[in-house]
Image 1 (cartoon, chains in turn yellow, cyan):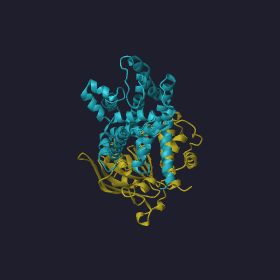
Image 2 (cartoon, chains in turn yellow, purple; image 1 turned 90 degrees about the vertical axis):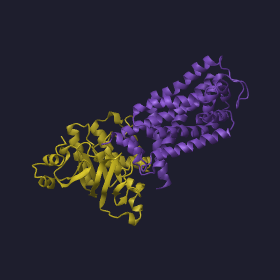
Image 3 (spheres, chains in turn blue, orange; image 1 turned 30 degrees about the vertical axis):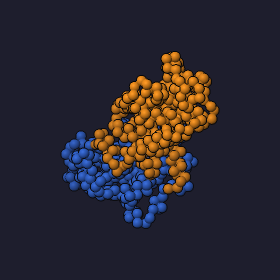
Image 4 (tube, rainbow over the protein chains, first blue to last red; image 1 turned 45 degrees about the vertical axis):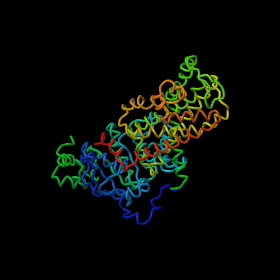
Amino acid sequence: MAPAFTPEGGKQTRRADDSTALDVRDLSFSYSGQPVLESVSFDLKAGEFAVLLGPNGAGKTTLFSLITRLYDHRQGEIRIGGLDLRRHSVEAHAQMGVVFQQPTLDMDLTVRQNLSYHGALHGMTPAEALRRASQQLTRLEMQGSLRLRVRHLSGGQRRRVEIARGLLHEPRLLLLDEPTVGLDIASRRALVEHVHRLCREQGVAVLWATHLIDEVYPDDRVIVLHRGRVCADGGVAELVSQTASASIGEAFDRLTEGEAR
Amino acid sequence: MSLAAYGHCLRGVVSRELLRFVHQRSRFVAALVRPLIWLFVFAAGFRMALGVAMTEPYQTYILYEVYIVPGLVGMIQLFNGMQSSLSMVYDREMGSMRVLLVSPFPRWYLLVCKLLAGTLVSIVQVYVFLVIAYLYGVKAPLMGYVLILPALVVTGFMVGALGMLLSSFVRQLENFAGIMNFVIFPMFFLSSALYPLWRIREGSYLVYQVAALNPFTYAVEMIRFAMYERFNGDATLIVVATTAVLLGLAILAYNPARGMMTRKAGAGAE
C-alpha cells in the first residue's frame, strides 16, 4: 500500500526544491519580549546528516518546536521538502519524523502497540504499520522485540524503538532532539552509529541536536547554535581551521565562549 | 488524505486509550468505587432524611438511591473527563501530546479523536456501574439503558472538552489538584445530581440559581430523562450548545497560531 500522504500528491508549485529536505530562513522567535532565536538560517540537503550543536539554553528545543509546529513562528520561513510549513502543514508533517527529548512511548503497551498507534496517526492500517515496523526494527537490530512491553526494554532499546517510530512513515527528514539524554556511554555510541548508518542507507536527512561534542563524527556537518544565533555552519575540518583550534571540541568552546562546559 | 486514513487515525487513538485504560486497573477500580460509595453508603444513610417526593421523570415516589444514580453516572463522566485532561497535562509534560500533534492530520481532528476516546472509556465505566446498581436494586426500564447512550456521548464530550480547555491553561501537574477543588466539586455539588432543583430552592435561593446555571445540571437531567425513556429537549439543547462552545475554545487553545502553547512552552523550554 502506498503511504497515506504522498508528497507527490501535492501540486508542482509546492515542490520548490526537491533536493532540500529542510530549509530554515531568517527565523526569529521570542517569549514575552525575550529573544530566543534571532534570524536563524540553514538548510539541509536530502540525505544529509547535520549536528545541531549548542550548549543548554541555546534555543535548540525552541527551534524543534517551531519546525514540528507545536506553535507557529511569526518571523521567517520554514520549508520541509520545499513545502511551506504553515501553508502545507499536512504534507509537510507527513515528511518529517521526530524523536523528542523526553521518552514518549507508552510504557505499559508493547512495542507493536506503540508503533501501530503511530502508524494510525499517519493513516496506516494495522497490517501496514506492522509490516513497516518489522522492517525498521530489523534495521535497528531490534527484531523480535515487537511483543515486548516497553517497560521491559533498556534505555537504549527504547530510543531505538522511538527512532523506528520516527521512520515508520518514511519521512525525508528525521529530527532528533538530544536523543542520547540519560543513556550510558556504550548505548550512546551505538545510537549515534545507528543513526549515521540509517542516514547513509535510507537517504533520510537527519538533524541531530546535542550539546555533547563526542557525538560529532569527523565527516559530519556541524551547525553551532549559541544564544539563539547560528554562529558557525560547516564541516568539522572547516570549523576547526576557521577558529584556529586543534579539535572540534576546542572550536566549540571558542565559538560558545566556553559555555558548553 | 483519504477518508479511510481519517478512520485509521481515529481507530488508533481510541484503541490506545482503551489499552491504557485496561492496563490502569487501579484507575478503573477508583472510578467505580467512588460512585458506589455514594450509592451504598451515602444514599442508604440519607434515604430516611431525604426522601424524594414525586418529580419528573419518575412516575411514582422513589427511593433516594434511585434518584441519585443518574447524578452518579454524570459524576463518573465528570471525573473521567478531568482525568483524561490530567493525562493530557501529563502527556504534555512527558511529550506524548507532541507525538499526537506532529501527526499530519488537522489538529482539530486529533483533539476530537482524543475526546471521543476519553468518552468511550467513560461509557465503559458507566455501564459497569449501572450493572452493579441494577444488581443492588436500582432498576430502570431496559430500553432506558439503550437510550442513555447518546446522552452519555454528549455529556462525555462536554466534560472532556472542558477538561481539554483547562489542560491548556494548567502549566504543571501540581496545579491540577486545584481543578478538583474548583471545578469538579462545585460542578457536582451545585447541580441537580444529589437533590432536585426545587428542593435546593427551598433550602437556598442562591444555590438554586447557581445550580440552574450549571450545565452539569442539564447533563444529569438529560441522562435521568433518557434512563426513563423520556427526552428532555431543553436540557439536551443546553448541553449540546455548551459542548460546542467548550470544544471550539479547546481547539482554539491548542491552535499553533495562538499564543497558548507558546506561553506554556516558555515556562520550561530553553
